[in-house]
Image (tube, rainbow, N blue to C red):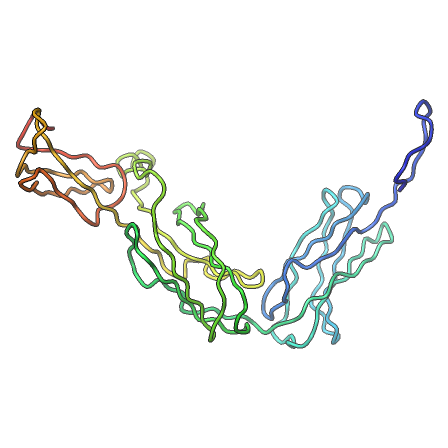
Length: 294
């Protein structure tokens, strides 16, 4: 294709656009056995729906697999299965062919690695409160010490639309990872739907819960909440003052909590109370013995 056009602009010219393969790359640095590794191919002027064929190979002659599809937007992406018996000192690559265009290309080469196993993903607590310092741990086999991995913390959603909270890098040491994370809820708890609101849609109250995923060389572990869910517990402070601005002592109260439950208590001599471990969300306070404060 010409990089500079110098012909007259008042005449129709016919130009031939040259098709090509711009690049063919793996999307990971290591191809671990018993996994699937992502790849992508970028093309130039091959046309929408062009047939593409991918064949995975290794330097030691092992066939990885074959993938076929069509190009869309001059781009094709997929995954290649890596056998569990791939040798760690081998290297893998893939061949690309666009048969109708007579184009072929070979990808970059990445090192092979043993299968990765991640076990015992867990939090050191079952519940989190504001300011809690939590420890996340897991046992990891199949990667070398000092390998950098990524820990991704999600807020769980019953509908499967989990929200990513944070990504934190850490390293493998002695076949383990250990990460310290300080918990803080940064949203407005009043925005959490109450049980009463959700029942209109046939659903029930669900407090914020969290799980974590470990990403190693493009592989993700823990997406089925293997770490178990960490539950957020909140607190509420109640302070009651009269018309003169002074505290109303020893007044009984009822908390109507967002999960539909109630909690009863009594203010102290300073007109104050603090309730711990309440479900987070919008809370309504009732003073049953006094119409003035209801």
